[in-house]
Length: 241
Picture (cartoon, rainbow, N blue to C red):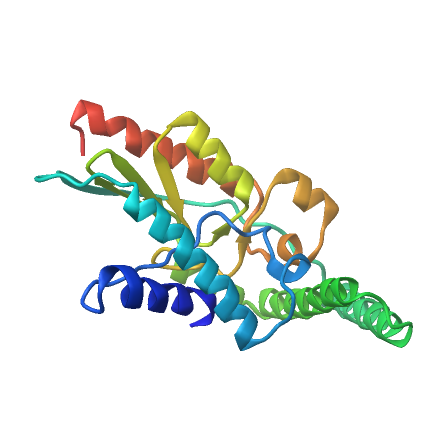
């Protein structure tokens, strides 16, 4: 669905053939959003962006050399993640009302579309925090923690390329750090689980906002996941499993 579907259609119709599967994975994009660059929020805009992506991939395919036999290695490890605290239910309810009032004020004043959309996500986030606070108060939140912990970090190495799979939506800073520490590594997020939210940075946690407020886990989960990935990658040369 959405723009990846149109990228796949372009590649299968013009480059690869319909028999070749096309896989799309999110990178560390937890704090990236198209709302500041997309022209509209329509199917036609998804088609435009997907086709542009397909053309870019076509150029990469044309410039890629293929070979014969390759090695494939797969490993994984599990890590526990530190939880974060949430406001009490009454405080969470107040924040929902404040976020809704701010959104309605922007709409009345005909503010720019980007500002209205940001305020909408803040309202959504405040509503989600209220639901989480209620679940924590009732004891139901423990059920969700038990479903997604421990978190699995996956490694698939195909020839010279290493792909690391993280559950959840990590902020882009963690992907950049991983690539800097182990060049030739590509992070994949939302892999076998989504951790019910985002893995944010310390700066984002201090600022608040949609992603940081409704994340179930403390910001230090990001370094924990990156360090686990680096350790897995270090075992490739040693042969350890």
